[in-house]
Length: 595
Image (cartoon, rainbow, N blue to C red; front, top):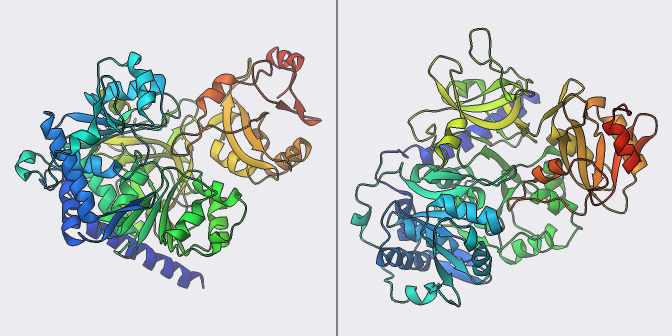
């Protein structure tokens, strides 16, 4: 039985890999075939098919292209030249994708700004984008106005909606723009390694960085998922992720639009309305990221969750416990988990559905892929080197950093960030031979004997306590299985006089939560070094727009009960978790408590 199951898995993997490679093999950095050319080909083939649906309004491929062409001519009309940048600061809406698609037709770069940002983080992203113009709507315009004082240069604001003061009315300006495609000569001399988009990191540990997304990189995303998902012109893909992020804005759109299918875009994710929408719109696929699936399984059951026609869910960040429950409860036939980063050169797929794995590299494929795991020192936060100065590759079961060899072809090229210094910090040199260069993912992983890869933690999130490495992700997964714990965010905090960092768990709880029972389960199921020393009760866990947990503010808060809102507990060796008081905090800081 095991041999048969393995053969079936291998067959599924090979089919998925071949579908993907077939779509991406012709992508080349020096080609004059750009992303907008791929999309134009799709428009010509499926002109009358529905392409985009948003709030019950639908655009066919032809109508979507006409909208894009207006933006292309608008950009030319205001004097924008290829290589220059326009910032797009809006929530998901029908025009979002046509805007940047249209701008790419005349070689203009679009900086996709997180619409949840405000104040300094917003100003920072606009400043580093290099844009002189920003497109907003009635929702984001007031937010932009409040951030203007922190900009390092004036930006012309174009509003889709009512314009005021020095704002310009974009809706009115577009009315005089042609719906016909701009002449291709305007892109003469451009090649696929030129920049198409700026996409910003999530900012989980500080201010966001701007990743340069070339036409090559965008084509790899869009064509890659057009192949890997096996989507057809009959598929409808539900996208409740922000379109400023690569997973929703490139991977999901590519899967549909390069196959003649359609995309149902939602303004934002709602666990309450998710299945209702999926059923009403006859969606056959959806894209996920981070904790979205956990929100779905934590939501009360609905009639619609059993009436859907979804055949595939694809995305990244799906933990093993949630994965199994997703398949069982929602009866989703296939889940396609993948791994990649906007700025990096590593990508992998779990085509055959091994629960918890983010990808696979069988022995026969090893020499064809550009990624490896190298042994890593968690305390020094750097790869371990042998006596010869080179890095040491991990074996099965060993945890190490995933790195990708940098080359000149489409799949191994590293384009990095707008900030060259930030780009250089992500390069690891002299890895397996003198002079080689590898991209540092910043992610710790492990493999098994069958070549499956498993995500362990982000570097900086993993910490050392009692001489052992503690994976925040693995601990959080265990805590979230405890009755009464709705969500858990685990991180390390410094304690005066102690080596390493003590584990602290910020938890959102419901009426079932009991701190005594919680402590008993923690003591039973987790090794001593991984048991949280401190537990903080939170009303909610702050996430980024792509559902990644923010830890930076929690780490800065520490465990002082006089400055933290909500209850804080510490682990007493004899009593279990005990509420932390001001005298108790002072005693810990004085070294009077054994942690």
